[in-house]
Image (cartoon, rainbow, N blue to C red; front, side):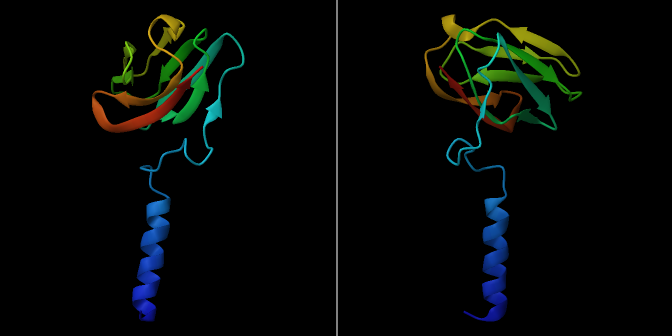
Length: 121
């Protein structure tokens, strides 16, 4: 492989490693939000903050949407599907009645590229 082709391959590999398409739960970047009665999750720049986190089923979740656009906090495979209006906050009751322990995909139904991972325990 020539020097230019090798350099291009390195740049492409580094760029792919930095893309948001990777699974944050696979590399240990998940945030433990299990302390306290309420977990706080932000929505900003069309993403969840943090994008990967763990909460207890007995916790409430306080959502704050810093975007002007409406978003959803939808946990695939559960009954959790909450609309969070633009520039607003919303509090969710504990999820114990809506879901079982496990790791789930978190999505915004309005914006297909807006995804995350939530672990319920």
